Length: 191
Image 1 (cartoon, rainbow, N blue to C red):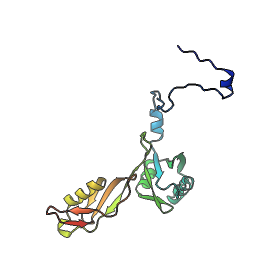
Image 2: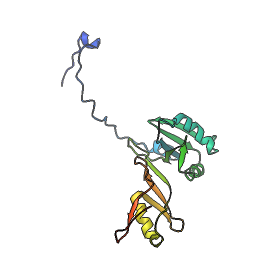
Image 3: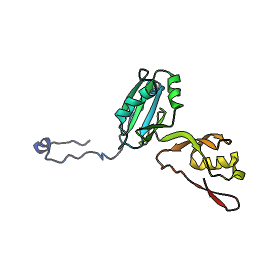
Image 4: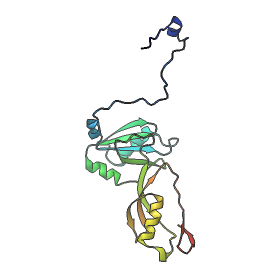
């Protein structure tokens, strides 16, 4: 066992004290978090996509009023551009989720049901309807819409008649408003 001796210089901040490598992640102990997980079961977690233009404190003050639920939602700034909305009922939570996609101060923000995920970028997925145009009429099929949607994100629903796809996309990647498609014969078109 090592013994550590401190000199008077160490106490005055003039000495060098050797410590373990502080770049290593701090290992958290295993514990039962089920109570906390259940507590946040009626919560939505969000992230602003443009922190220079979107003030989180103003956003969490405005959105509950905008949704007409200011007396039914509590909000919390979690730092690093993230925030949490806590709801009293599943019905109110679902009503808000159904209003997406979300924007504040002319910029979109991510808002999803809270899950016990540990990741620096969480949350990052956004779900919204994508309207397709430019597909040649003879290629307007569910199979082709599915092929396009699979390249854009995770497909939830396809509306062939309207040319719309309900997609979940990764907000960490830039939105693209046009993509090339290639037919079996090699011809290309922009959609």
